[in-house]
Every structure is written in structure tokens, then in C-alpha cells.
Amino acid sequence: MEKQNGQMNAPHPGTNLPPDYPPQYPSATLQGPPGHTGYPGPQVGYPGPQVGYPGPQVGYRGPQAGFPGPQAGYSIPPAGYSGAGPVGFPVQHQPVYNQPGGPAGVPWMPAPPPPSGCPPGLEYLSQIDQILVHQQIELLEVITGFETNNKYEIKNSFGQKIYFAVEDTDCCTRNCCGASRPFTMRIIDNMGQEVITLERPLRCDSCCCPCCLQEIEVHAPPGVPVGYVTQTWHPCLPRFTIQNERREDVLKIIGPCVVCSCCADVDFEIKSLDEETIVGKISKQWTGFVREAFTDADNFGIQFPLDLDVKMKAVMLGACFLIDFMFFERSGNTE
Image 1: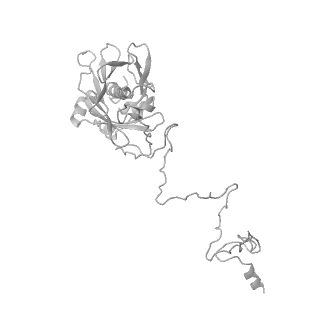
Image 2: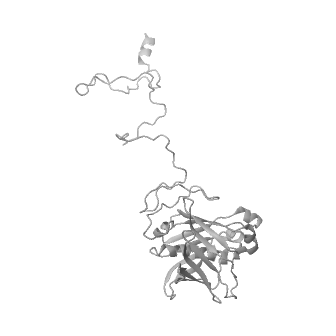
């Protein structure tokens, strides 16, 4: 008799419920709406609640009607995914161009709609008033001292990548001419397309020779000049002139008397032609003693008005690279 009562009080097969655990479905005597024939009992093979399952949380309303579940083939966002871009930019799923040596997980800036008359690829510059230029550290160059092609990540103030710049010079030129070498800098976007090309010819870097001063030419897109940066001779100050595609002077760049990068930023002010108004600046940022002493990898910041012509913003980017090679390319440079 006790054995029979034990069998009657035993839980359903496939569950681990105690004998006094209440049933998980309503009784057959519970009346439903008209025409309702009652609730079915548990299906054959239906597993009961698993041990350790916490149950629904308080306030949880369950899945909403019509809410689709995960789609087949849906991939989980990678680690480090930051979601949407800055306020005002639409969320766009653009392919990421994997640059050689570039860190993984750094988001690209969504492409804004191009303004009227904007060269292709420069629409990114129309929405920003600051650019961060970070040079990558080349381990081969640090260990052996063998000069390699420079690579730079160009970002906005949110840390999103805008462009990736790669120097294109041959081995002999890099190691024979050093920081004074002529170079071609190719700037590519997230689609892998070259949108800006910088050309620096071979010129004398002596401040005592005013007849052959430094210069860099900016093309956007490649083959179409949009501006120039030319050095202006001065016995004490680093001075440059920003010109448009017709070689007309637009802005001036004036650096400090002593270009010292020891424990402080170095600012090159961008001024109007009459040098009365400060329009922006190019700052070489202090990156720490170890990096400054043993590498020539530098960080720069460029500030300019938001409504400045995108062509002039691209030319300022070229001025930043020219200043880097002229004053900060040598490793351990603290003068």
C-alpha cells in the first residue's frame, strides 16, 4: 500500500520536482472562454524546469508579439565594437579596410553626405574641426635602426579612423636621405581607395639657404592639385604659407623659435595672411620619454574652423606631415 501511494505521489517522468511541487499547468476543471475544450496536459517527452533555472525575473513581460528571433547567419558584434558614431551621424555598416599593421577593433567614421563641390573622399573633413594623426611604431626600425616607410592613422576627435596614410619611397632614398628625403604619401579611406596624395620634392633643409626651401603638394583626388605648403625663409622662426590650387596665398603657419619637444607639446599656429587672427594650430603632442627617446613615431593634432574649405583642411594635413619630417622625424629628437 505504501509503495502504491509513493507511485501516485511521484513526479512526472523527466522532471526533478519534489512530490509536493504544484503542477505547471491549470487543472482540467478550470473553465475557459466559450468553445474552449480545456487545457491540454503536458506533451510526451516535454522536459520540465531544469535544476538551477532562476525562472522569469520580476517585471519581465515575456517576448512581445511579432518580435523576430535571431536570424540565421546573424553574426555577433566583435569585441570592442563601439556602436553608433557621434551624435548626428547615421549608423552605417561600412566595410572596414584592414590596413597592414593597424590595430583591430578601431571603428571607422561613417561617411557623411558630401557637400556640393567637394572632391571625392574629402566629405569626411566637412564634418570635423579637429584631426588626430598617430604614427605607428615600426619594431624593425626600433630594433635595427633601419628606416622603414612611415604609416599613420588619421582619426577624428571621437577616436574613429578617417584615413590611413602610408609613405611610398624606396629603401635607398629612405636610408640615404633620412628625414630630408622626398616622399609620396598615399592617404586612403575605409574602402581602400586613395583619396589624397602628398608629394614632397627633394629640397635643401638648411635654414641658411633661402633659395631652395621645403614644399609639399597636395592632390585630392590623386592627380588633381588642391593646394600647396611652402616654407617661407626666416632666420629664427619656422614659417610656412598655405596656398590654394592656383598658388594664391590663403593662410600662414608660424612655429616657435625653439622647436623643443621635451615634456611639452609644440604648437605651430595657423594664422590669417595679416597674422592678426589665429585660425587654428598644428600641435606635436608629447608622447612620453621612452617613445620620444627611442622612436620617431609622433602624434599630432590639427585644429581648424568647422566651416573651412575641405580642400584647405586637406592641405593642412599635408602641412602636418611636412612639419613632422622637417623637425620630428629623427628618433630621440628633443631639440
